[in-house]
Amino acid sequence: MSEILRYPAYIGGEDVEHPEGRYVHTVTARAVLEDTFGALALKRDLDTGRADPRSAGPSVVGACALADDAMAHRAVEAAARAAPDWARVPLRDRVAVGVRIGERLREKRDDLVDLLVAEGQPRALAGPTLDEYWYADFSAETLNWCAGQMESSRHTDNRHATVRRVPDGVVCVNPPQNASTPNALFGVTALIAGNAVVVRAPRGVPLATTHTLREVVVPVLEEAGAPPGVLNILCGPPMTGLWLDSPHVDDIVYVGGSAKGFDFERAAVTAGKKPILELAGNDCCVVWRDADLDSAVASITENFRQSGQICNIPNQVVAHPAIADELLDRLTDVAARTKPGYPDDPDTVLTPVLMAEAHFADIADAVGKGARLLHGGRRLEVDGKPSDTGLFVEPAVLRVDGLRTARETRAVREETFSPLVPVVVPEPGDNDDAMLDDVLRFVGENAYGLRNSFWARDERVVRKIAAEVTNCGVVNINDSHSAFRPFLPTHGGTGLTGGTFGEANYLMLRTTRLQGVNIVGGRK
Image (cartoon, rainbow, N blue to C red; front, top):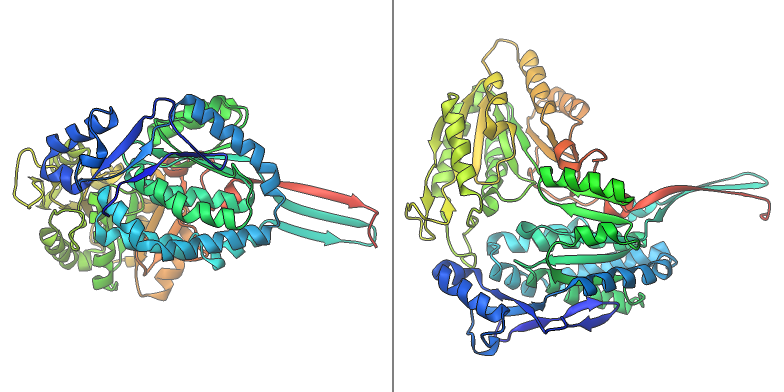
């Protein structure tokens, strides 16, 4: 990327600048890792206008206009004007727009990956992440299934009755800094249901999100003749308070931690808005005695992606005692071979850990309750050397003996936002059926509800798992824990993951509401 990208805000189909010309600049993650203080000082000088980005060198790749409150108000007003006209576009045409967005994601993949890497996502993960979204959220299979849920009719001689889903109107999307671009794309699927959308790109990593929406989604909407304002794109501070107060906003997609998420849910309901929550994850992976261990290990060590700072990865493991030792040996080996690196290095999966002290506190709590630390427990520099001030942490593997002990261990009970794998080994016994009942009860008691995965070959065990595990949005059996598959939901769940109204999160459906229409006469 030789030239600096510059994106004004996109409001009502027009480029809009901050009244004082303020921009937020992106300095590459590599530059930050090589010279943290120098890179952050450069960014500060660029953002405040004390430095010229044209002379800043290759470490600066782009800038996005900063939005103020007036621009944010203007965006929701533009969305409110566009929503009725967009809702009248036939559903089949909106689905075609969604399919075309997926196709364009593939066409623009390499450019998007470069920007994701510049902002700190490892190259080994950036491409596959984008692939998952066009393959799942924007596939014809997924979109047509959702479209099939939008209307059902019954006819008699003199009566026409329809139950349909109608768009809520204006949907505002608040993607998180740790996965802004994927969650912004997820939020955009609300368009296909007939809503107008406002996306706020976080100030910390605005460029890849803004570029993706401007270069992928906006051209498709323009080609389809969508009304100006159907998609609005801003970079700025959190806007949820403004959205809650706005008479134009109907739904708010909130992605963040559970504590703040539940506070937001209460505020949204009080304000008469629909909160659609994507909060924390504390996913469980169960490995039974007859599991394919090669595949199970590959799935469990998805925990190390982005140093565990994404929600849909396995955070805890339950291993049958018969295979626990071998599984732990394999996990420890992978953890030892997983090293830090620059995001543009092809083998890197670890990223700096923002809450490293919590990582070490989780380990200390577990060890204090009798767990064994098999690997990890150190800070690391980008070159893999141990350091008291390193920005990375070494992937950690814990052995926790006994389901009862596990329930009292914070690293198992609560979300860990770091590369930490606690492996719970149930008490050995002669009765596998009783042990399976205990394990499924243990999984069902998890306060979170995003994903659970299971590895087992016995068809009777598989059927029991499929029938009884209901406390999550996605259950994967003998497949990658984090897999995104067409037709199946990519997000959503119960409890601390999705709030009071948590469920599998298809935004085409969650940003609409059921309505009955009854017509008597007027038909032959």
